[in-house]
Every structure is written in C-alpha cells, then in structure tokens.
Length: 406
Image 1 (tube, rainbow, N blue to C red):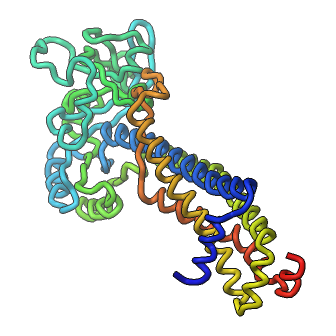
Image 2 (image 1 turned 120 degrees about the vertical axis):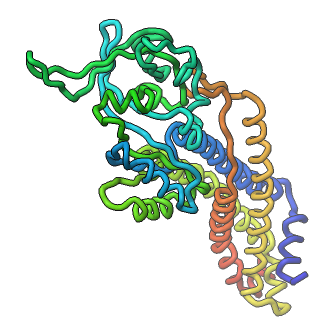
Image 3 (image 1 turned 180 degrees about the vertical axis):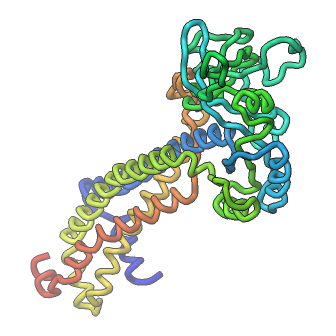
C-alpha cells in the first residue's frame, strides 16, 4: 500500500476524541443521504415518465404520417413503409375534428378512424377498452354506426354504452334550403381508458369506413400509423419513411407529437436533480470541515512527516485520500439505501395515489444506470473539490513550527 493511502486510512480509523469520530460519521452520513435521496427521486420520476410514455405510445404509435391518401393509394403507401427494415407494422388512420352532441350538451373533439384488427399491430389501444368493443359482432345492420368514447369524455356528457349521440362535422353540405352542417348519428359501443387524460377527454373512435364517410374522404384516409422494432431509432426511421413515400406528407415521431409534455418532464427532472444535489454539496462541506479538523489535530504528525522527507505533494495526497475514502463510503451506503427505498416504494403501497386521476395506485419506480452514474460522478467531483482546501492548507505547514507548537 502506498504511503499516502496507508496514512489516510490510519487517520480515518484511529481518530482520537468523540467529536472527531462524530464529524467523520456525519460526513459519511451526509453523502449517503444525499445520494440516496437523489437516486430515489430520479427513479420515481423515471417511473412516472416511463408510465406516461407507455400510455401515450400505447394509444398512438411510434410514428404518424399525416396527409390525405385516396382509397386507391394508401394500401401501396403502407406496403412501402412496411418494407423499411426499421418498421415492424403500419396501419391506416383518420384524424378529423367534430362536435359531439348528446342530451342537449355539445363538446368539440377529435374523431379518430381506425381498423380494429390492423390497429392491434401498432399499439395496445384495444387493451384499453373498459367496456364494449370497437366493432361488436352482434351489431344490428340497421343500427347507427358504432362509436367508442374515452371514459372522461363519456363521464362529462353523461353518456354510456348503448346511447345514441350525434356527430356534427365542420364541413357543410349544400341543400335547396342553403348550407347546413353535416350530421351523423352514432351509437356508443364501448368506453376506453388509456390513462392519459388528454386522450380520454378529447377523442372519439369510429370505424375506418364510418369515419371516412363522415369526414367526406370517400374511402380514403388522412395518414398512416407506424410501429418500429426499436423506439430509439424513431428519427432515423422517420427520415427513411419520408424518402419512401415522397413529398406532400408530414412524418412526425412520438416525441415531436408530444414535445411539450416531454420537454416539461425533462425540465422537471433537471430541476429536481439540481435542487437535491445541494444536499450532497452540504455534505461535502462537512467533509471539508472534518479534514480541517484533522489537519489541526494531526499538526505535529504532519510536521514530523515533513521533517522525515515527506513532500507537500505527499501531504496533499494524504488528505485527498481521506476525502475520497469518506466520499466512497458515503456513496456506497447511499446507493444501497436508494435500492432499499426504491424496492420498498415499488413493493408496498406506502404512498397511495388516487386511481381516478393517475389510473395507478402505486408510485412507479424505475432505476436507470445513467442516473446512478451521474449521481456517483457528481458526488465524487464535489467531494474532491471539498478536499482541495484542507489538503493545500496542510501541505503548507512549516515542519519546525508544527513540531514545536503541535
């Protein structure tokens, strides 16, 4: 073992006086609590972000292609898209705006047309149905077309499965009496809950043919939804899709479609990281105070080592090793404590969330190596700087004065 490391470990384990021992333990505990708090908080935030992303992608898809495609064109475009190696599956979709009227109430919403069987290839929307279905098998031929509503939208209108509602299109139709808005009666065939409030409160789902007829697309669609093999290659896949289908279409990834939401989540995580990192900075001040106390306590020893030939650089290394050992102990204990806390939070329902708001009852937790490495690296960086001043001060001690007055 090198001289500096040996002396540092000896000073750490053989401190004299209760106060010196307590300050060392406080330094270790401060770092461990700061590391544990930071990792646990980031893991909980990762859990919420992952849960939100799962719900958004589960109701949409990885990439959406927007642009009107006639009935004779979109099957060929889907074939071109599915030939791209990064693409797993593709399905047609229709998006349009309308007004939903029921029992004297009206609300603006988005009408989404889909083929239930093809939709299963690109997302998990069908698993979000809480009641009914997109295309009931026992649907009467003379009954109004089926329409699935989000649970929040249905609750706001007071509508339920089996109720007849009216969709009003912003497109007008010309009659002998003048221009009138286009209206069509639908019957609620199911209720759907994705867990994402914006979707559950603003979207109604109709069959592809019914939505196309209602919006005047004549059998066409407004785009294609795409699922990828690897979500992390969305930007690369989007560029390949643009090249495959040609000009006149807008290709947007899930991150671009929900850019405001993801930007807010990233900002929140960054702010929480900065705020909680202050705990580690405070802990590093305890380390600095502990090393200053050590330098005063061991003043005579420092003078003797200098007189025996130890250079100022060696003295600095002794104190830096002391700071790094305290930081390492604190970081290791902090990681262990964080793992324990995350396991407790994920296993036991300590914090009960309101299910009608979050659609989950337990706090989601997801530990990521990148966050742990960032916390560990930042903690070492702060603790290293905390040890610089005490180390520099100890290395400038005059050997004669230290032995005489130490």
